[in-house]
Structures are given as structure tokens and as C-alpha cells.
Amino acid sequence: MKISWNYIFKNKWRFHITSISLFLIMLAVSIAFLHLRFNTLSGTDKMRLEMYKSTLYSTIEQFYVLPYMLSTDHIIRQAVITPDDMTSSELNQRIAHFNTQLKTAAIFILDTQVRPSLLATGRTRQLCRAKL
Image (tube, rainbow, N blue to C red; front, side, top):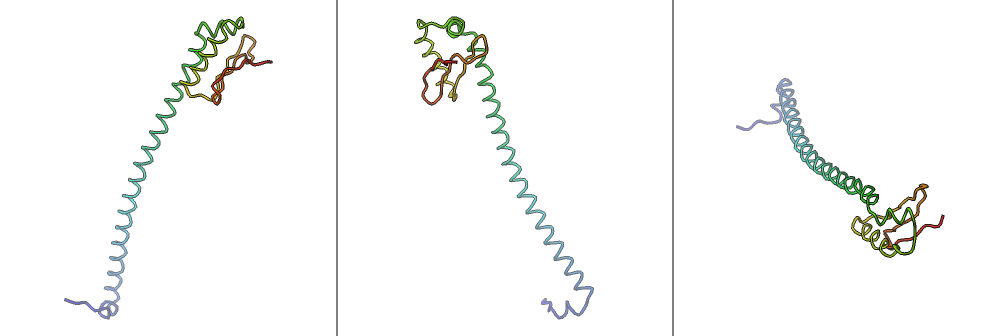
């Protein structure tokens, strides 16, 4: 059964019903497509957010222990309290090792007057005694 366009346009109520039906079908398809697209993007955003969260937590946990670890190390404590050249090479190796393992840009160790007394830089991986 073939319906001609003239038949649809002659009867106004049939035209309106057909127009509204087509509009509702297009609206339903658009809503379904947008819902599917939103769920896909929402899933990838949640995964990305979880990745950022885990990276941030692991970085915080990695550097949370560093001040305690450095403050309890007897070689570093001795070098800050009484700096001498006897422990300098061992101290250099220890700080450079910490810096390499943690992949930090720099490690600053403050003396008792809260001035930087030791510095391990990430680029050169060498220890320098600050002259302040």
C-alpha cells in the first residue's frame, strides 16, 4: 500500500500526527544516542580520575616517608649537627642514592638553625654543601 504525499498534506490532522510522530522518533533516537555517548565518556572520565587519584596518592605516600627517613638516618643527623669532612663522602653517596631512588628534583636538608646545609640536586645527582 503506497501512501502519496498529497494524501498526507490534504488531511491536516494526518499531517500533524505524522509530523509529531517523526519528531518523537527523531527525539527518541537522539536521546538514546546522547545517553550512550554520555555513559561512554563518563566511564572513561571515571577511569582517568581514578588513575590521577592513585598517582597522587602514591606520590604523597612516597614523599610522606622521606622526611622521617632522612631525620632518622644517623649519618645525615651527624653531618647536620657537626659537619666534618670525614663523613662527607659517605653522606654524598647516601643522599645521592636517596635522590636517585626517589627521582626527586632536589633534596634539601636543613640544619638546626633551619638553614639549608645540604642539597642534593636531581639533575646532577651530586651533593653540595650550601654556603650561607
